[in-house]
Image 1 (cartoon, rainbow, N blue to C red):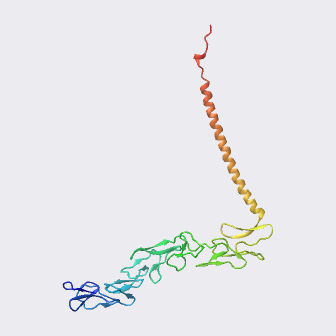
Image 2: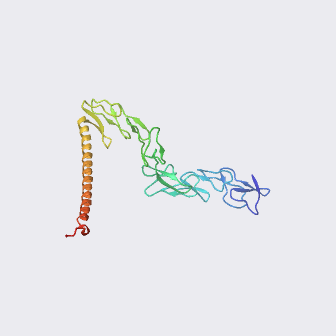
Image 3: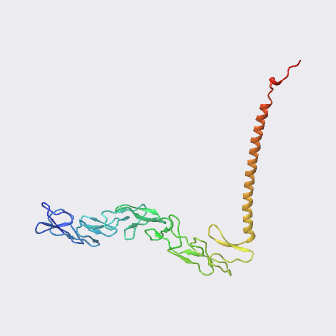
Length: 271
């Protein structure tokens, strides 16, 4: 498209053509001055532009300044087409060809606008680990906690960097395991628990470590828990009864005190 020439010059992104007309610069060229320049400048390597551009779009990790693409300083990053770089957080480095900063485990780099970015905790259902720069969605039928570096697999599977993987024959795992545990020698498994000898049962502890324990041991543990609860309940009941007795005694004492006074009006006179 062509426009009538403004007095004396053409705007940025346009060059002067005969017959006093201003024409848009072709794609992959630019013009950042207001003058009678009769051609546009070709974009430097590692950059592109659309028609009528006043500057070229540099690759990520570079910024545009004075007609050239400059490499961002060490420890800073940029989006494609940036005019300046963003400094990474303390003790962080640039990754992904200078487009993002490396964040702590469970956090991903997030851009806000053209020249602002920060590390943010991964949302539930996403994770970030290793050389990843952005939080990734968990596979189907899995989930994750906020700020997680892995997804939670069902029992019988374990998290293998980017997916859930079945435990090998003769090994088991609880839900959320990062590795499988081999069953004791000669024990078989169904993927979730090891089959124990008669009189024993497979049990997982709080650290996701499993072992065979005596049925009596498990029953005893439950009995101890119930006994402990019963003792606490009994103490509370006796405390409540004692409090009620004290309140009733105080009320009775107060009532007896009022009734012990002598009413002279009711005493008969001797004749």
